[in-house]
Every structure is written in C-alpha cells, then in structure tokens.
Length: 179
Image (cartoon, rainbow, N blue to C red; front, top):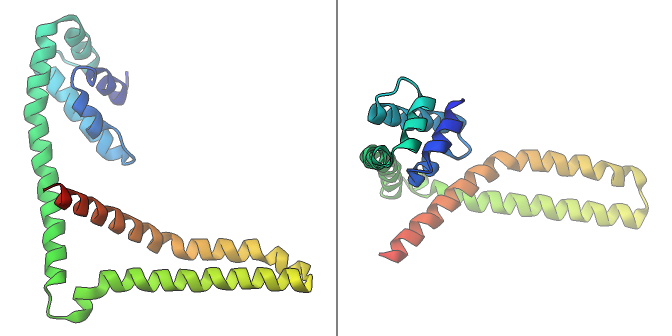
C-alpha cells in the first residue's frame, strides 16, 4: 500500500490529518503522510504503515492512543506553520514601515499597475476585434486567438502572484474581523 492510501486510512481515526495530507503540494502531502504513519507505527509498535493501520482498526484503545499521539504531533505542525506565518508577517511589517517609499508601497503599486496594464490590453483586444469585424478582415480575426493567448501568458505569472497575495490579505482581514 502506498503511504497516502495508508494515511487516508489512518485519517478515519484522526480526521484533522486530512488537512495535512491533502492539497496541491504533493511533497508536503507525502511528508505529512510519512509523519502520520510514523506516529501510527510508534503507537502500535508495528514495523510498517499497513500493519499499524490494521492494528489500529482492530483495537479501539490503539485508535484512542493514535488520536492522542497525533494531537501532540499536530500541535508541533501548527507551531511550525505559525512560525512560517510570523516570518511572512515580519517581512510585510518591515516593508510597510520602511522609510523608503518604494519598498513600502511596492505591493499596492504592483497590484494597481497590473490592473491598469490588463485593462489596457483587454480594451485593445476588444478594439481590434471590433475593428476586424467592421472591416471584415479575416486575417486579423484569425490572429485574435494568438494575441489573446500571448496576453494570457503575459499575465499568468503576475496574476497568480497577485491572486495569492490578495487571497492571503483577505484571509488576514477576515481573521482580524473575527477578533
């Protein structure tokens, strides 16, 4: 059995483990699955994950012990996550309090600049499309998908960066609003 399958089996006893073994980052998921299996092997004394899973499924006392052990380990994982977020927040605070106006304002500047650039490109493409249809220029109409693809590629990286930054900022604002 592969580690992720074993970890998913163990997650029926520790549902909070799903948060750590799922997601887009496969290396983090595999690492978390290995940690979960390690906790299960430690609890059961079994040499491999499949045997540990079978032992926990067969013995409710081991299932309870697995939950307790995972909770202790999960507290450690949350501390690591908190430390990572603290480092990100410290960087952002340093940027926002910097005496250098470019360093302090680069995130909002980049967001607004990207929005303006995207709108100019989108308006230009719409203008080209209207012009091509009005002039019945078949070659220009055929070129529009290539132009759109080029613009999509051009904006994909900064768009992803801005999307993540906006999502994280939104999460921070929601957490602050809950306090």
